[in-house]
Length: 390
Image 1 (cartoon, rainbow, N blue to C red):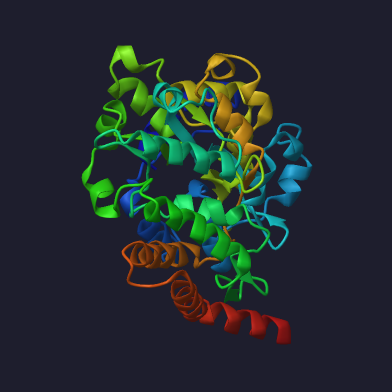
Image 2 (cartoon, one colour):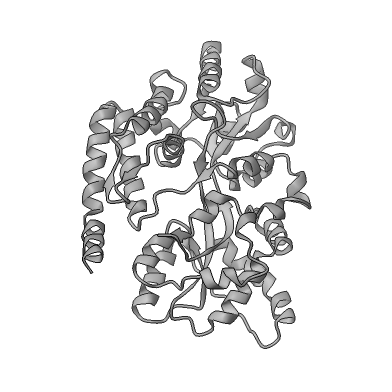
């Protein structure tokens, strides 16, 4: 999909040269249409052998019976080494203990910050805990610089709140993913910390955040912290003027009592159950998973590799902006692995915005979120109940 679909074609010639008799045809899809096209292909029994799949889509395609289990392939492989992968990323490919994908590139969220503005507020290093982060935001607020906020939290982005929630001991879903668990103490703690950003004036109102150009506002010093993903390393390098390139940096996400967890995102490589050439498809997965090929892929796309060994040398090892991602990936956690997760995430975003606007309390939003989630998961409960009776 997207840019990755364009770039992977550049990696094919070397694979075909070293694997005589195997020819790879690459078909690119826009991300906006990929999900529907893949479902249509499955319904029409016209799926490809091998596919890039967002790792939050894997549980859905497993539930459909569309994907081939890969445990036996991985067990016999000298290339795929599960212990070399960041554990939270590897876990996104496991459904009920079975492997259905191999991580291709990874995504997580952490802090981008203006270290020059943080220094002006009296801090030389980024926060490592919620308490430190709150103190910094309060200091930035007290400086009362016109138009400046400590952090920007766009209403369209549910990931910051979910990342804070994943830092808690309480799971987002309970009873094996059958029901919502948003009335838990952990989610309430994360939600209150998130809401305090707006309540205390550390973050601008959501409408203002949506209207702003993040890169321009970051360069103008309108906010100090921004929670985002690895693609913005390249964006800030391209969009910010040369004189500001030493003024920003990345840092792992703070947690309640120290370094915190974040979301385990990215894309994986899967083989469809009806693949005509599964053995050849697996060989291509092994090739794309080699650390040297992953380093080349990173150089072409900026995508971060899921294997620790791929970070050990080359440009990635020397990239000061990527170092925080390397640390954060050790603490990445998968979102709930249910097919309905993306619908649930949308409800989190919608209800969080209503709380920020003062339409609901945290308790009311959590209760409503549980109710909506339970309705979304109704079919899942029915299917699991039927499965247990067989």
